[in-house]
Length: 72
Image (cartoon, rainbow, N blue to C red; front, side):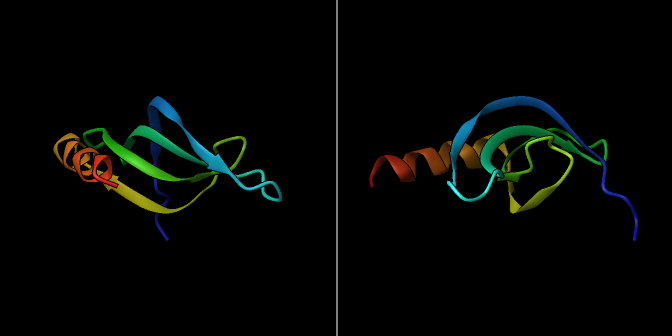
């Protein structure tokens, strides 16, 4: 399988972490395979060498998500 390249351009923050798991749910600006950086939400290992499944969204999608979450 082809290696997926990732570069964290900016760390926005950590949403949370389980007490029994060192992986943290983070919001980052990431460039995947050299592409345009996008906002990314997923769990990361402490060294950021491995990650779990997550979502990658554009800035416009993130603004829409922010509006939706503001109504909760």
